[in-house]
Length: 82
Image (cartoon, rainbow, N blue to C red; front, side, top):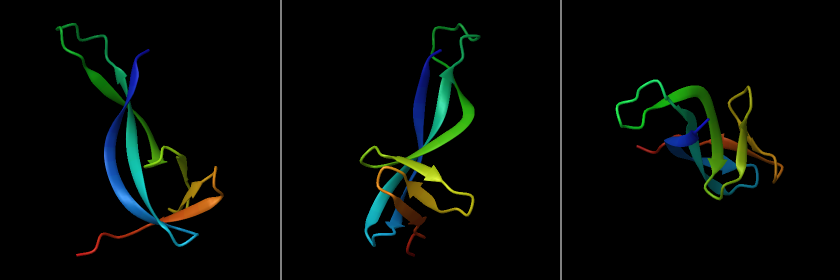
């Protein structure tokens, strides 16, 4: 089955170390072979994932915080400044 990621959003988060991190949110897409009109058709799977700009995986926690398992770091999404 063909899969790909589609970028949904990017935002800044503050780490438990006080540093700022760029986080990218993606949705998973799969190719829809039922439409054979010569074009590629992709459908969302309902699955999303988040990564740091460096490519490290980010887990979403139930309280809305995020965790970077490889670093033992927690992140809190920053609100955009007006």
